[in-house]
Image 1 (cartoon, rainbow, N blue to C red):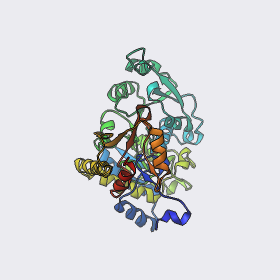
Image 2: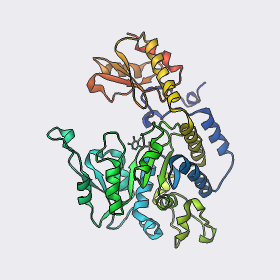
Image 3: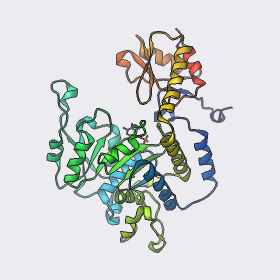
Image 4: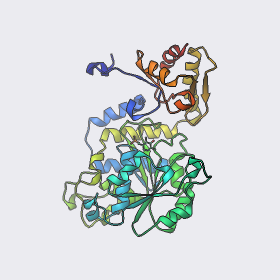
Length: 383
Ligand SMILES: *Cc1c(COP(=O)(O)O)cnc(C)c1O
């Protein structure tokens, strides 16, 4: 019997992808076993994050990294690090960040996740007019426009990692470097390919945030913040509970910049982003699996689930597999809303993505599916 039945909660078949609303994905038994083992003993959280930093640094090429309560939490902590640096007095004042609190964000890269910059005490300053989207033109923000928006109030730059994002990351990194401004990248959902674990840092980002609960396959409430050691150290210290005397505080080499602090901040702005030992260990085991897994084999396994759905549906011409880093099954229908509602109302409920409903298309993602779901979905798609 499902553990959820104990609480009167029905389970769903999640073909929508690792969306938070549908509880993300399913974890590999190695990951759940690691979380269970982690739950049976206590550790010093600073030492555990130092261990996490060693794994994350090896996998991403970053100087340092921490496990956060998700990519969103990572961006909040990263913003706090950009605003306060290694100054505990400034950490304690957040979200009152003082005058130097502006984050430049290209207007076409705005989304509702970037509000965490504001939560930390920052202010968003939009740059550029993306008239390539609105039709009358061909351009997006240009590097010179970002440069022109920099003032003494600027605290950092946020870049959203998406294939269509302009200016490119190397172009924005050149501007950030010239003005010694920290550049943070929201790469929450940019895995696979696994090469992206290293790519954004290699292209000049100072901080990168990834979700742990998406394709990495870690706990739903986990993520990674990695990058420059001073910024990651600042982010970490604003999340940890530091109810101790300075003499008790011995920063490990992974977070060596913390040894320079004149004193310790109190419970930081990141306290509400607390990450448990179970999530940290689960994320690390999932990350090592994801990074070492054969990319081609992973793709083939995902594709096999989609092919099995199509086969169980009788391979109708309305079903087509889209080749993407995560392959998707596309269902063309005259009534996307109606079909999606019918699938969600059935037993068991099946959830797919309506992201392309205006094109008359439903999308099915394999990431959160178990192989045995394919036959169930396929049977329900038979017309
Ligand atoms: C999913 C997502 C987030 C939030 O990530 P969590 O790990 O759920 O906190 C932030 N930004 C983008 C672009 C995302 O896709």
